[in-house]
Image (cartoon, rainbow, N blue to C red; front, side, top):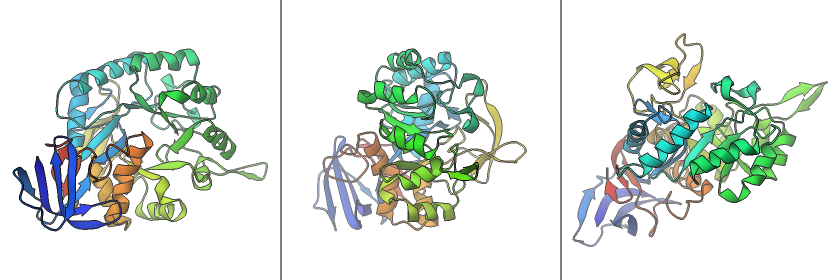
Length: 388
């Protein structure tokens, strides 16, 4: 058993000065004030925040490794770095690639998950591509972008062996709606990303299982004029469709604080989830790095809390970590700690069907807990009841 006491416990609706007790991988008691003496290992939180472990549904790497670098060790090292920064549940995320590289990643992922290493829970993977719109491809490799075909996505599903938990696609592509229909019963969170879709495209896709917009504002269409008429894009769809969730890169740079505040003001906060969309530079010091796989990635430089192209003409990727998302939402946007924890932990867990398992500090849930210092740096991490 483990007792964490003298903590400011972030619950779903308040922050309570109290304690949390775990037994094995479960939370068995949550209370206010001082706990009764118990024969177990104890951690004095020293009045620090105790938050639920962060849940990241969109991350390409950390700790100097990309999840698609090509070895089991790369996946383990990246996941360990994420865990050190408080992320206790993660969906390793791909980039558009050759089938050979994709299938190698899927094989390595399954081996890493069963390696016995102390890692975040990795319930599956997030496939970002290859079914994207060339108009909004961003950093995705144009050589491998294609339209969905049943033969292709079923081969991917077979290779994944049930590991696909989320798939980002451009829903306006020929075959995309059929793909969502064909995979409707596979438990996949379908998300619109790198898309030039109109409002009509997004609305139709929502009727076929689309429920999330990938990195809101990035890699997506916005309002345009055609023949004098204004045509709503994907961004406007995120605001207009009440049942559509939006994913925000909450590093405070991809979406500056004022824009984050605008989104919070205009969109139901229950439909907002945070992600890092991190590349290998997350958790690393400033300096040269690589965006994408080590073998054929783009050289970039990390500085000012973000990855930039070498000529510094534009951003090249996020280096955010789970605790940084929380800090941005609380310190820069002004959310309460429970509101920030909802977006960084509970809501992403709910989106992949794990809301009853993790994402909040409640009796019966998995003991995924993070103690944060005043500046939101990580003091301690507990993953499934084990101190990291």
